[in-house]
Amino acid sequence: MTNLRAEGVSLGYDGLRVIEGLDLTLPDGKITAVVGPNACGKSTLLRGLARLHPLDGGRITLDGADITAMPRKELARKVGMLPQSSIAPDGVRVAELVSRGRYPHQGWFGRHSSDDDAVVTTALESTGVAELADRPVAELSGGQRQRVWIAMVLAQQTDIVLLDEPTTFLDVRHQLDLLDLLTELNRDRGTTVAMVLHELNLAARYADHLVVMSAGRIVAEGAPSDVLTSEVVDEAFGLRAHVVPDPVAGSPLVVPVGRYHSSAVEPSAG
Amino acid sequence: MVTALAALLLVVLASLALGVRDIAPAEVWRALTSPVAGFMDHDVVLDQRLPRTIVGLAAGVALGTAGTLIQGVTRNPIADPGLLGLNSGASLAVVCAVWLFGVTSPIGYVWFAFLGAAAAAAIVFSVGRGQPVRLALVGAAVTALITPLITLVLLRDQQAFNLYRFWSVGSLTGRGLDTVTALWPFIVVGVVLAAVLSHRLNMLALGDDVATALGQRVGTTRTLAAIAIVLLAGTATSLAGPIALVGLVVPHAARRLVGTDYRWIMGIGALLGPVMLLSADVLGRLILPRSELEAGVVAALLGAPVLIAVARSRNVVGA
Image 1 (cartoon, rainbow over the protein chains, first blue to last red):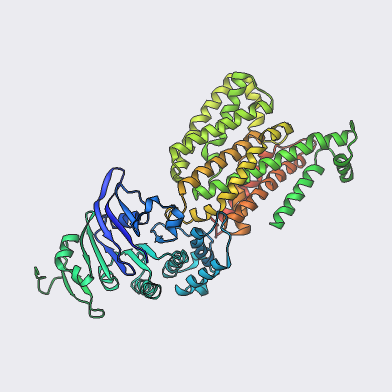
Image 2: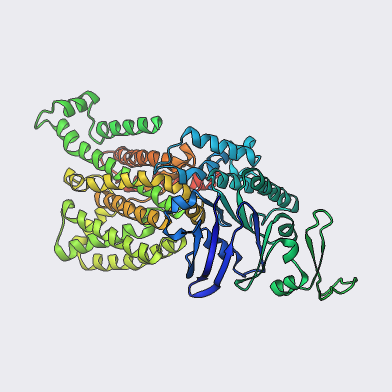
């Protein structure tokens, strides 16, 4: 089991502070979802946790050890990250792309061992893309392609997997499909999952631990049913909303109130 | 791999056997194994065809490898060493060497070409900071800045103009083997670096973030690649002049043959470079009766249609 923690972390771009003195611990073996309005720093935070973005202050530790003191390949064997900016090279096939997830376990010329092949096969199977192994990635649908990227991160065999908006560009069915897949990985392998999500209600349903961010700080964190209240939604998003129980999962369901089409009662202050 | 090796062997043989002067294959073989001093056929093979074949092999390997590296490291399928201002830097250094120091022998200006290429690349890489689009912009700016400077020198110095006219076309002739003897270690170091970097390019192709998340130090990869590119392309330009399109076309052909794994693309690219350059040189000897076209001209004539065909085909295999 591994424990990823941010301690007093500050992050920014070209002198512009996005996050100042933030503390966060990813609960071990749980699914954490980070939500918040655009430009609140949630992606930057995730990138900082994966050491894709340099820290302006504070430190990030893995089991107590500062991750910046760690060789990058060693970190990549413990923390996997799927960024938004991934590129599938033209013509690359599914199995080849997934096998590149083995990089942190290989030497400089990337010699494949039978161990690598077994891990890649398992990753393809557990993401349900085994039958697509020989297909060019470019020919796949958006949902399939995202599964392939997840398979690549799985091939990395890390205890922690970070995902930056993995459901963006997917239709609602494929969003659920992907979150179900991540839930299975979490339950079957005990993988700690942390992801940035846009869709509040899916975040509330799928996360064990919900982190709500606004303007570079954490507004609230904890179990979704404790955290996601209409006050918190208002504070983070500046949005009036009803919060009712999700009829399917029982998790909080945010029903936003816009300026039009409000025929029902006003949301209560409490 | 076998096909590429066979093709290379074939063009090497053709380069030794074919030319303006008709020499029977058996006589070519005797020239290589038991030469008779003073016999014209043997002298042509040993003093002209053999050196230009070796220059073509060296420059071709360097161009093919450098082109593959630069397309991989910038993820830009139309990148070539010229993009980094290497050719213009080398050209300016050569004309200045002739103008200021009266250097006229290939072994003399080879070093100027190399330093000019390295200086231009150093400027482009330091300002471009490894970001693909910025590299291309700075490279274009440096080239645009240097080109009129070259013209200025050429207008002032007749000797520089005459030499440059010959050098800038890109040719394998008139370079003694001493240039290869002086520069081959650069090619070896460049090729070894390229081999070491080839698997890193596979990760870099997935984007800087993915490569970093997989544990690669992307900055180190780019710096090492820049060093290898300068060593290889600088050497090739020094040996054969600024030859266009070989470094651009070869990686596309290699990807067509072996797919998306840079460990294979790099190896095939290193073989296809000399195949293309020597084919261009041999064709140049045969196209015109009793005279020759420079390899650089033929390479451009061969390469341009290939590139257009690649662009027109529906599934372009990008970098």
